[in-house]
Image (cartoon, rainbow, N blue to C red; front, side, top):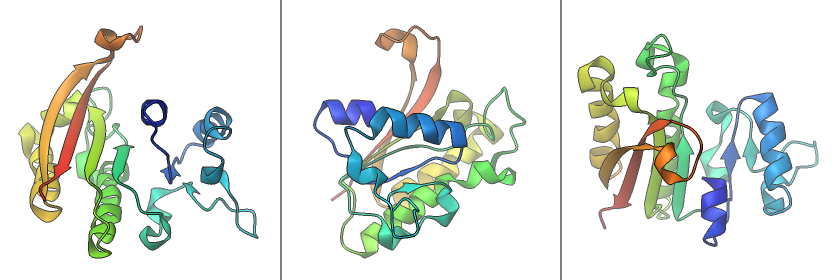
Length: 172
C-alpha cells in the first residue's frame, strides 16, 4: 500500500507493524521518502510507526483521507488454523475500525478505506466472518463497500497470490 499510494502523491501519516524484522525492512524502505513517519519522542519511541496496533492511541494518529491496511490473515487462511475471531490476530480488523470510528467522532472521517486479507476470509465460517466485517464497515462506520478477490500474477508481480480487497467509500 505504501509504495502504491506514494506513487500517486499519497503521504503515509501512521503505520503499524508487530514483526521486528518487518519493521526493520519497512523503515529501511520508507525512511527516506517518509521521514515524518519515523520521528521519535524524547524517550526514543516512534510517534507514528506503531509496534502493536493494540497499543495505538487513535487521538495521537494524524488525520488522514485514505486508510490502507492489511490485518493478519493467519486466523482466516486455509494454510492456518482458521480460528477466526478466537485467534487474537483475527480481531485486529476491529482496531482499524476503532481508529476510523475515532476519526468519525472527531469530524475527520476518512473518505476511503482500502483493506486486504486472504481470499479464505470470504468463506470463513460459511461467510459469517465476512458478514460481521461488512456489517461494521457498512452499518457501524457508514461506508459503501465493494469486495473483490484479485491475483497478484495479473498485476505484474511474479507470484500467484490471491487476496481479498475491500474498497470502502464514505456514503456521504
